[in-house]
Length: 332
Image (tube, rainbow, N blue to C red; front, side, top):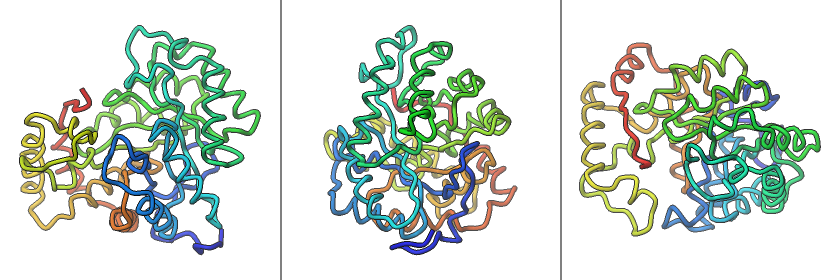
């Protein structure tokens, strides 16, 4: 669609988002970082510039959440999307009512996603975004114990029937992609969001074959391992007090990451643009609809968007990357 920012960028490598009619770019915009609470150091003017630059480069899916800055991320996203003279898809998420991430085993859905709460959260997101509909509404945590419960099923069906949500999905538990398998088999899920990167390749075992079979879209999140796969983390790296990454890379985790990245680069033979390689690894899997790295500055947008237009990774390179899977959970 032509508009203020022109036509879709031919280098963005557009693909269908599962069974929806959304044609989304290989690189999407992860908008957690622009919420301004868990990630420190960002500014609204910088965030708006990054969002506009992303759209300029053909990015047409933005993933945000009601919990990102208590709606602030949604407000910034909605402002830019309303300005755009082209189709930009907005994905957002209903936060757990008990505000516990990830969902805990044994905690009933009535405490996390009761029907009325899902509906009211969707309305709040629409007010923040100032849009008529949410393109993809996702539950921000998931527990496979809830698969057979009526609350989420009825809410999703009613939101789609009313036109307030065009598609619905789940953001799956950190490092537990199989938690969404039962929900996908219900036929009620249009897309799932899952951690997938060079270190965490676990979705390839069971989740991705099922999403391909059922034609369910996949948003690959954390493709750069919260910064671990940028090649910039070492034992001396410092983060602002209170920044999420201070927790994620606590203790000797920075040293562990540095050792893993050094081994990866040595195996590849040097001269590697590691962030671009990490994004291209995700894009190489046919189940992946879009990859959503977090982006807060225009320079990050430009570097990440460029990865979508690069040649597919050679089978030999993918084989090397397969050897660097790492079974660990830094969210704990």
